Image (cartoon, rainbow, N blue to C red; front, side, top):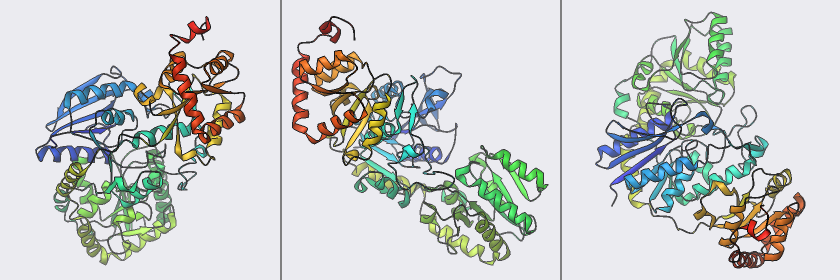
Length: 559
């Protein structure tokens, strides 16, 4: 039986409210209303408060645990693992004792919290909101507005990262760690078929993904009952003012409308939100003296968003990244407001051009300007399309969403406790260039997708049991890591420059050594192609470890 549910999200209302945060909170409230005991574990960015302290409070009847994070915790080199957060989460699990843990976006919190729930054999689900599980940018965008189609080539955008200790490591290792932890999730929920297919391509089994719309408070927004205004029609953008949201495309389209004499005469634009490109918009409006035609409303609290839809005839969604299931599109459709959106990603799940809304070629400002003009000059179909839009989402209620989620909770089975992925643990204070090159080269190997490269200190000692090999990727290694590997029966791969480690391999017959990146690559391939030899070396390591108390005592000098 399911009684207690723990919702996890990197941010949570009333702080940093975006689509994922709104959905996580709505879900928690609906589950509470359905009679379940619901708690929330989340992060809170506050450089002025004690780092990794935890605040417990009540919000809308929910028990909320907020972990204080500092700016450094959002660094790309460390925003995916954090043992301090993992330990705090373990304490909350002990206190709440949930039957289900439902994750949302948890990057910048820690992926290790998945393992903590997995270890306790708690049912886990994760709702996908964007591409963070396989794209460090979240957006899939490469240069300009080009969408990435090969998720294994992250090094083309960012070859390496640096963690809090100044340690460099290959981007592949970050991706491997995230994929390894996601493999422990029992079920995934994708609001759109688009995003589900993207994650299947990235390696998640289609058998573990359920497509369930996030839902919308249909009753709240259908009360707006919007009817199109007379010319000039009001077109509204709602969202973060940044490149991936297509703000640059909107500015270029507005400039074309201005040059054609349409901006202000047949259409006017409302822009809601803030972000990096807010100054570009303000400059455009000021230089062209068009404040009467382009209304910059800034950020509007979501509790007051109806006031924006009240003065909106058409919602514009010009994103150049593939959206998942934008909350604003659902809200507008529920209100009977047609949406003009780019023909990319989850937008295509909701909008059929000329029937439930309008589509234009993503990134094409001219096409956007033409569509705005066409809609403004021929607005007689807007009410009909608004009705069709409403009909499309009328059953996507929060009540229906919560019932589907509850049903999925009950049907979810704990995944097998055997993790099929093979792990190569990397140990060192810095990843040497030769090791770095080997990992990059390994991307081309036929074995590449079968193995995960993880830094040894990213995982718990319990997780070490799933490893096959410890690879020393600097000239020194860590004594405790090497002892742990030997005790667990892991073969070791060591640099030839460290003669003490070479001697260890020879005397213990428990590993190989390499002089450069070519030899390291050959050794890895040898281990992979000769599993019996790898196993034998591991067995030798275990027997040899029984003779050791510390490595330094064995060598009579410290490593």
